[in-house]
Image (cartoon, rainbow, N blue to C red; front, side, top):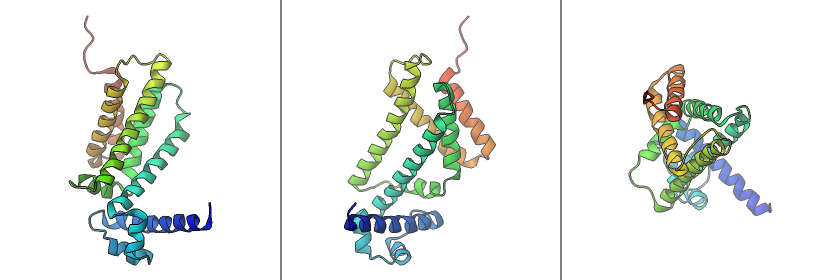
Amino acid sequence: MNKKKQQTEQTKKKIADASRILFMQKGYKATSIEDIVKATGYSGGNIYYHFKSKEGLFLHLIEAWNREWEEQWLAKEQLYTTSIDKLYGMAEHFATDFMNHPLTKAADEFFDMLEKPSDVEERINEMIQGYIDFNQQLLQKGIDNGEFEITNVTGVAIILDSLMFGLNQHSRRMEREEALATFRLAMDVFLFGIAKPSR
């Protein structure tokens, strides 16, 4: 990496680190670019040069959170021998990460905003597609090793993503053990259904 690129990356990191603390403390809406200017010592123009907008800056933090989540999951994944065990493990990892992550409240505010710049919407859509791709790979492994019988992997991957997203919203009001039990129950239902077997 050449010196100019290294300086650019260092500047981006300093802005991202300072803004993460502000978003954690104040939330997304209450944190302004002026707050970030004061915290970093960089000009507004410098911040916009690196991130284009407040939304772009926050999305950078969300993408870093996603990478961190996936790295932690990949380190845990090898502890599970079957795809069914992996789904339970992934649900638990999902539950504990969102319950404990300091950016959760700010992320809720960010995603609840009605209007976002088109480039931010595009990046959000790519991120969501990444979640679905992740689920598809997990499900495909289960099909390949004979655990799952799925004809529409994409559809089931979308359902799994929707289930995790919905549970994330509901589990905010729960204690840790109740949330984990709810995520486990969700995996029971997802994998085995609720219909009584016909006699």
